[in-house]
Amino acid sequence: MKHILFFSALSVFGLGSLAAQEQDSLMLDKIYKESFTNGEAYSNLRYLTKEIGHRIAGSERSDRAVQWSKTLMEKLPFDKVYLQDVQVPYWDRGPAEKAFIKGSQEPLNVLLLGGSVATPTEGLEAEVLEIELLSELRQHGDAVEGKIVFVNKAWDETIVETGVAYGLNSGQRSRGPAEAAKLGAVAYLFRSLGSSRFDDYPHTGGTRYVEGIDSIPAFAISAVGATKLSDILKEDSKTKVNLSGHGAWKGLVNTHNVIAEWHGSEKPNEIITIGGHIDSWDVGEGAHDNGTGTMGTLDAIRTLMALGYKPKHTIRLVFYMNEENGVHGALKYGEEAKEREEKLIAAIESDAGGFAPRGFDIKASASQVALIQEKWQPLFEEKYWVSRFLQGSPGVDSGVWGRHFPNTVMFNFRPDPNRYFDLHHSAKDVFEAVDHRELQSGVAAIASLLYLIDQQIDTLH
Picture (cartoon, helix red, strand yellow):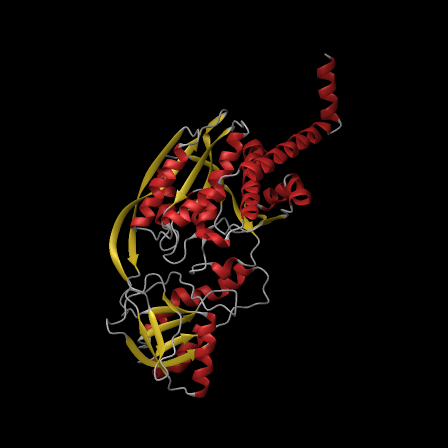
C-alpha cells in the first residue's frame, strides 16, 4: 500500500514525469557509450566504400551492395530479413568525359549529368553562350541556336544552411538541358552544385529531358573550371569548347530494396520505418551520400539490440534503391505498404552525410513539433550538442512513400551542413572524408531518437 501511495504522490506532484525523464536520460547515456565504444558503422562503411565502391542503381556494384547488406543484416537478431523487388532504369556513364578550350587545348574538368545523352563519338565543338540564370535564356532568342549554353551561377556563400543554397541552383541543373534544347542549343554546361569556389572537382547529379524535344548532352563543370571559362569568354566571346561524353540509358534492370524487421512486443502491427538509400552516383565511393546513412541507421538498431532493448513497435530498416536517379525504391515501398494497409506510424531517414549531428527536421503538425521540442529536445541539446528540432522536410525517400501515409510522423537526420556539398556527387566523396567520431555520434543520436519514438510516439497523438 505504501508503494501505491508513493507512486500516486509522484504522479500528483509531477515527479513521475521527472522519473521517466531520468530513465530516458540514462538510456541515452548508454546508447552514446555503446556507439562510441563498440559502434560498427565506420568499419561497415569501410567495406562498402573500399570493397564495393560507388553503386549507381542497376549496376553490378549496386547488386553487390544489396547482397552484402542483406548478409550484414542477417548477422543481427532481426526477426525477418528480405529483398523487395524493384525495377529501375540503368544509366551508364561510359568512358571518362573530356573537355578543352579550342585553340589553347586547355582542359576543363567536367562530368556528364546523370541521365545525359552522349555527344557524337568524335566529340562536339561549338561556341559558348554564358548566362547566370536559366531564366535569362529566352532573352537571347536565336543567338542560342548552335551554341553550348553555359549556366554560371555561383553558389551563394552567405547562406549557412547549405541545403537552401543547393536548392536555389538545383532547378537549373534538372531543367536546364531541356530549356536550352528548345532554343536549338547543341549542349549544356552547368556550374557544379558545390559549396567551394576553389573546388576543381565537378559534381554530377540528375537531369531531366522533355518528351518531344531533341535531347542534348549535359555536363557539370567544376567551380574552378567555370571561373576559368568565364574569364576567357570575357576576353573572347567567340571562344569554342570541345566536349566529349558517352552516357546512355541501358534499359530496365531488376534490383531490390533491402529490408529487415525487428518485431514489436506490444504493438507489432505498428511500424517505425528507418533507413536511407543504398545506391550512389557513379563517381567517388558514395561514402557520405549515402553510405553513412545506411550503415548509420543499421548501427543505430544494432546499438539498441546490444543494450538488450525490446521494442514496443515493429522497427523496419529499409535500404532504398535508386534515390539518386528515379526514387523507384521508395515508390515501390510505399505502393506495397499501401496495398497491405500497413500502419506506418513514424519514420527516420538519414541522407545528409555523416558529419557531426545537429538535430532533425520533423514532418508533423505544429503541435506535435512543439511537444517534441518540449519533451525530447532537452535530452539531446545540453549534453550531446544536438539541438535542432524544427518542422521541415521528411527526406527524399520518406517524402515519396509518405504521400500514401500523410499522418506518419517523419524525422530527417540533419548533420552539420557546412562541408557536405564540398563532397556531394563528386570524386571526393570517399571513405577518408568520413570521421569516425562524427559518424558514431550521429549513430547515437539516431538510436536515441528511435528509442524515444518507440517509447513515446503515442503521446504525440
